[in-house]
Image 1: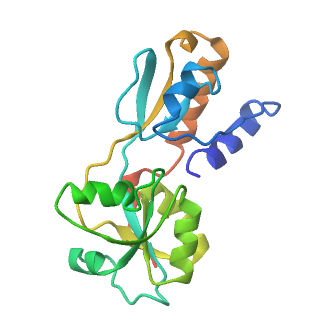
Image 2: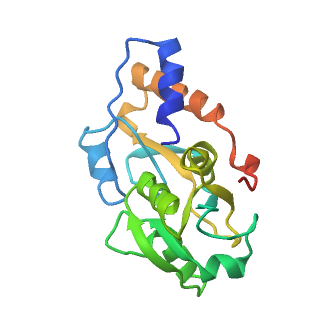
Length: 203
């Protein structure tokens, strides 16, 4: 949702005949998919680099709160107390309903009232559009997609350190000319996306 729209726009100018196949990955499956040659590279928040892989940080993972101002009467920016008193929709790619946000806050002794956990961000934004929940998503997702759902958004009012978004690939593909080119195109596309620090509270 962050990279592919901008990457495809970029590639249509640079190499209009190229085809990209995107696959769903999780922290549990990504290493095996890279090692087995199922995917050429992976982009995500995997914090530890597997043996036999190279990788680099693409951007930091700052998060934002998205909500429907017609349903939730919250100020911009919202306070810590208002955030914690609300119900939440969060990303989870495991069986833990707390998701990555809830787990990170649990490590700080904070419990969120999570009522929806989904494996990607569109259901979270759709839930926030239609119900009294706050969807906590990456700032770059909020910048690009919250306005399309009619959502207000602001930085998360609790300072939480999340793993950065990385691009990882197998050592044996490091010198592949085509994949060197593709990694360069991904870097160029990421640089064209508004950085996290530009997130402002927006109605």
